Length: 69
Length: 260
Image (tube, chains in turn yellow, cyan):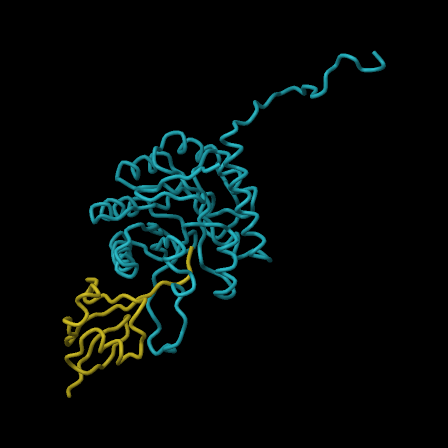
């Protein structure tokens, strides 16, 4: 399997190609609840996670809620 | 006596809204927040740490949307576009929930809001279907523009974020309260209970604070003080204060004093 280069939370990362969002989170060892994923500045709705595949050069943001005022 | 109020489509009992930042640990945060009696609790949206512990706790597990109305903020955003993106992420995170606290900061040292960007973001967010509670300066005309843009609450600062200086310009807050139809909530700069009481005595619909509780030596006790202060200030406002007078007026009758 080939690796692709992507940006995740502004960090450059090599990940396997053809991962969908749950597979990506699993690869990153992140729990898949209580977080949100943005792909190329568009929110990926949870209903679309299975069918959304990450490609070469994609820019991802993975965020969660934290304490704040 | 019920004294509930409405923000957008939702009805709330507590006029005290609290943040979840700066607590020594999550347990202290939830203890203080429960003691405050707040219905609305603010949170920030941030990148996850890659390579974090898979079992790391998530604040939404402890401070749950089942117990509180979570108000995601756009703290740390310096442009309208960043804040709109943050709100969209928050909406998806919270299952379609549209109530947000908009703050667009202008300067990293003063943390004062950038009002032109704030107004632009407010208009964009309203167009996108968000219910926008907007952090702003205590400028009268800005408040009117934000209400006209469709914000569901206008939230002028008492003093800069985290400064604890209390209400620096009560006349400006009072002028906004008298003019603005949507709820006016003093947000940021509250230091202690009397500051919160004063905000309510001025006629504000609520108070939003974080550091005043989280930064107290005993946050849980300060949370109780804030709850009581907001209630006391609200009652005093509803009761209508006496007129101030230049002269003293005896409270006891003059007639019948034994040496007269």
